[in-house]
Image (cartoon, one colour):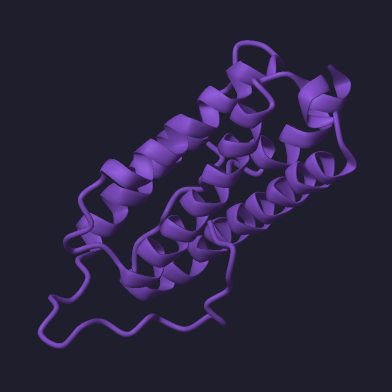
Length: 159
């Protein structure tokens, strides 16, 4: 059970954004695409904040995976219109990393023993969690950049 937490805590504590790094630049928008709206961007951020603050009811791998799944769903179901492109790219990258964590947990039938059944599986799960934790850190780091960009204070993602 402690090993389960050892794999998932970096992901969940980091509140789960990108398997790649944007280099700190604003992504290019398509020609004619509307500019980002500060209210829509703040609303999107707030919804991410709400789902990232959720906690698992237990340390069971299935419960932890369900929290991760809700985070991915929050990214996938939000309307992107008017939202800052850099935030959208970071959230999409975050969701992709989290989906890999979910996939590996499913392959192991939500059992830690299944994740430890082979060195390759254990390594893949550990790497997926490291990438998700890094993606989460990059998403959280956008807070000050977005606050400066839009002249309003974005609250911390971890509550």
